Length: 165
Image (tube, rainbow, N blue to C red; front, side, top):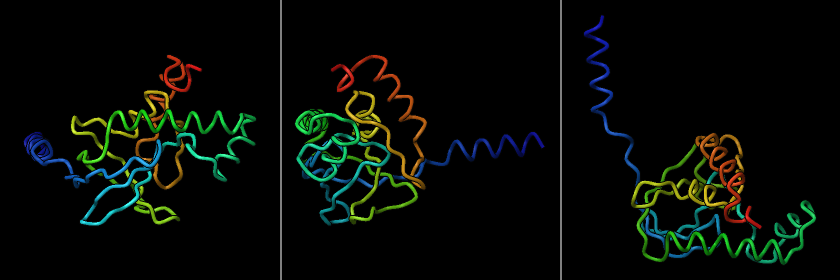
């Protein structure tokens, strides 16, 4: 029995993790949305599990202003800061890796994904860790919810990014 377990462990350790596809960034739309080339096609991708403030006056920005009691101009200013942070990490031509959760697209047709920087860090998580996003988990896509919540708590406690205001 011990030999079977040892062989199983060796097989598991030797099996590579699921390969991720590479994508190329064409544009940072805002703090949680990018345009990429994926499978030879230009696609919008919404970063799963996070939510950054809106960077433009739109219906969501107005709902957020009503919900939080914050000024619309403050919200869009924070959204622009979040987008600037993302642009400091990735820009046009950046090559990233993409990973999907349960659902591949949202109701607007955007890809729903986790994106990884060339050094292996997850972009979604880095935005939360730096204090530019809140956690927003919409089932069934919640694979990294606990990681995001931990990063969020640390950012709030350390008063970094938008939490430093």
